[in-house]
Image (tube, rainbow, N blue to C red; front, side, top):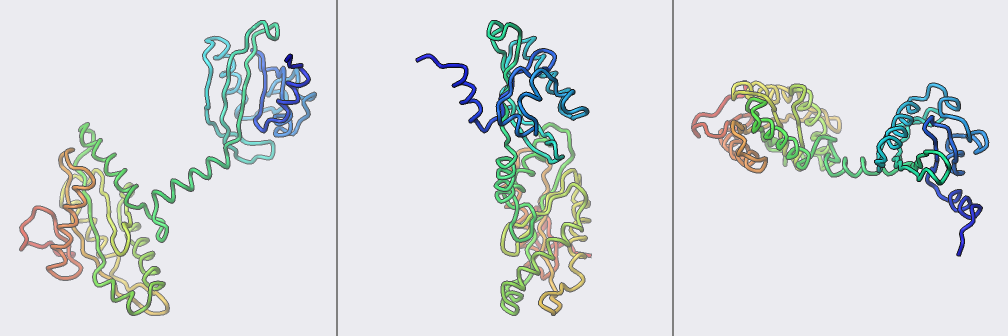
Length: 306
């Protein structure tokens, strides 16, 4: 069966992807219907003209021409390259471009075929999925997965000797069950959200506060260097809860127990550091409320919060 040019053009016009053929100077030699519609032009208005002529000053014009000339010069295709652009109405879009060299005899001159797919919705959906996988739904803080990822990144810096020691803090609210029992889970949730907000404001820029679930929070202190510096941040966490939290019209007094584990060598992963910080936290709880303990220190030597 011989496929006519008319049939090919009809097939290409049925595609939702944007199909274009351009020469070395960026002149459009062919555009399908989807391309013309997206750019709010008719095919006849586009053929023989360049992007600069059609859309003066558009931010992606120069990049497109560079890529076309690179494919023409090297013969190497560009596959599924994602870039951000703005449509004629100024809306931000994310597109995926593939460019490949057409045989020179096909059109009588060197030309590049570009197939462009609008992946804006897909990109947003993937970002939503990642956020759900990496962030706590209640507080909006990083969750256990993202926390472990950032600890791994800090460990890599330590392994390359590019960064000083870092610390992991494990935090458990004292007697939080009483808050839920007295006010119900909606009150408990409101308190957790406020605790997360206060903790986030108490730490240094670049630190990570995460919620692990329930009334458990963790803090990553990259580049903290020393136990004393980690203790300074711990005291800020305690101080952030000094004022009662208003929930359901009543003040709720909340304190926290904190355990600290230092990462001075790159052989400790997130799981082990959290285990150590958890052990220290439970030792802090045994000495009373609103206390901090450091893993490896003597059990009878708790660190006061003040």
